[in-house]
Amino acid sequence: MSSDQKKRIAEIRAQALDLTDTIKTLSELGEFRVRFLGRKSELTSILRSLKDLPEEERREVGKAANTLYREIEEALDFREKSLESMPSELTLDVTRPGIRPRIGAAHPTTKILESFEEVFTSMGFEVVEGPEVETDYYNFEALNIPKGHPARDMWDTFYLESPEAIQDKAQSSELRAQGEKERLLLRTHTSPVQVRVMEQRKPPIRIIVPGRVYRHENEDATHSAMFYQVEGLLVDEGITFAHLKATLMYAFRLILGEDRIFRFRPSFFPFTEPSAEVDVRCEYCEGTGCETCRGKGWLELLGAGMVHPNVLKKVGYDPDTVSGFAFGAGPDRIAMKKYGFTDIRMLYKNDLRFLSQFI
Image (cartoon, rainbow, N blue to C red; front, side, top):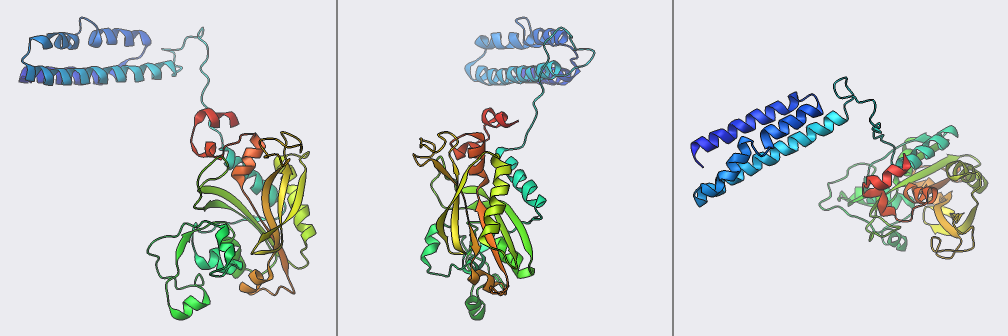
């Protein structure tokens, strides 16, 4: 590119891009567009003269001129949008239709988490959090799932490479005695926080634990490798299964609706005994069976049960003196049931067309 052409294109760039911010009206913007991008503009003349240049120079001049043309177009388009959305005395046209401002809103999962916190704090529960990177001891062993226990297969765990030495209560007694390193992992549930809290406090304890958990699962409409869970724990003297049932029925009717129907059915979790799963009757078929509930008439809501005596012993509690209940619910799936969509992946795609429905 000749030095004169290079200098002139640089001058046009500086002049045009510096002046775009000075445009005050849409009328001025139109005049500016004609001046710098119109058929008689100097930049257009440079582009038209490319055919008269040697091939090597033509390629270089054409690239620079076209790049500048696009830069000016983008700057003017941006300025035009700014002027259209800026209600000042210079641009306001009272005869034009109004422009609805975009209003943000809480994510569906966040709304369910907030509902949990509101309902359970009103019943005297405290909201606590814990680490997402856990140790084998807290995630499994302290919850009555020792090494080699078949129940570990219930959780497809993400283990972390090159774990650091853990020299605190996170190590099992065997590992502490041998001075070995304990493997770290991404927590598969929020239950480890129960143990951490019970180690530090004496009953009565009333907590809920919202947070992210991780499982090595294939993602589909109802499964995700990362999702949210809310754990609940109540430990005190004289706590029974009736307290668990009454608490959950009260809370979930407030969260999902007073008219929802629930059922308890026996289940198994190594850290609770007895254990149960709680289902909610399918609102689409009213219990008769449909695609959403896979013909069962019920949708799984959460797992719960009475805290296993072995878990209480691990933290130094006397199971003959105190008892407690625990539950774990998935806010993502509850959001699906509450708002009526069927693919959990929609919660993590950041698709504004989907998320804007919940404003």
